[in-house]
Figure 1 (cartoon, rainbow, N blue to C red):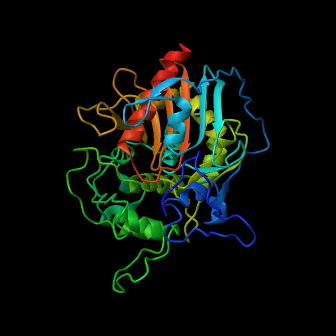
Figure 2: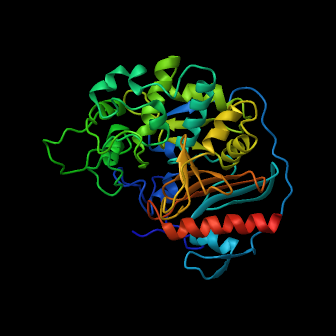
Amino acid sequence: MTSYRNTDPRPPIMQGSPPAMLPPRLDWDRPPWNRWAFQHIREILPTAEVWRGAGHRHRLERAEVDLDGLAVEDSEGRPSTLAGLLDETYTDGFLVLKDGRIVYERYFNGMDERTLHLSQSMAKSVTGSVFGILAGRGLIDPVKPVTDYLPELSATGWAGASVQHVLDMTTGVRFSEEYTDRYSDIGQVDVATGWKPMPPGSDPDFRWPSHMFELILGLKDTVRPHGAAFEYRSIETDVLAFIMERVTGKRLAQLVSEELWQKLGADESACFTVDSAGYALADGGFNATLRDYARFGQLILDNGGGIVPADWIEATRTGKHGPDFSASLPEGSYRNQFWIENPSSRALMCRGVFGQLIHIDWNTGMVVVKLSTWPDFSNIAYSRATLKAVHAIAAALA
């Protein structure tokens, strides 16, 4: 079945008692099922709570502007409106903060202000920020070898890599991020994390990892010297999380709760998906509300707000840029688990497959969050059109 946009009739996925349409376990993150599933992860997978605590909620003041009719381009470069682009790009939630105040907030596809939405790889930036807190406290030294913290990795491709190599995804470890190949390394992550069952009819001699650390220990090969080049590989974030857990004696969900989520004044507790060994998936298993993603973005824009070290954020905004860094970010870079849009704005971005985005721009004082359920893992045209729309919003609010 193909997917559906917000202006299309909604199929009865998980509606009725019993439901008329059940997402298949093997394809819950594929269209059209992801349009329901990304807002209902706790009904699909085991999760660990990221408690918001019993403290304050950071109030977001409002200064609303109706941007529905703002002139933007659609994914094919044709004239459109912001409302039209949000529909075209399968948006579930969209929020703009300007100078810390909500100026535009929209929900679609059954989502509301309390709905937890899957972050996909925006989780990497959440994990990286907590890593920065621990590094600032002197608990971890990014210059040191990975094996100083995880000696078991001396027999893997990470032998000889520094922690900073892992933060910047510049290790030489062989890891295939081919999302559509169920036998690729990232396909094996799906099984190791419990996101997916073993594919039916799979080779009985193929050894599937039973949890994430087992998968990491099986990655023995390198394809280049450590530090030679950036290559996006989700597994690097999980190595960071295991380092964090090892030096603190706490699980990742507890660390994110205590070091970040309680302190930023979240509206709602968040959650991580967990594997059979209780490991929270650092590279993509985080779930939170639209406003709380915006609070996280604002915290970064406020140079850490006394929570994340300001010098860590400044270092994160400094990377080796293009040319031709990626198809959707030709002048981009990557540092400390964040994307950098270009060397002139040095705007930071948290990005995830199927259209997740937090855009943080110091020059405009703006944070934009877009939660989506694209039919495809990646779509360059959607990414480019969304970034153009972010800049059009900035110009309209200047």
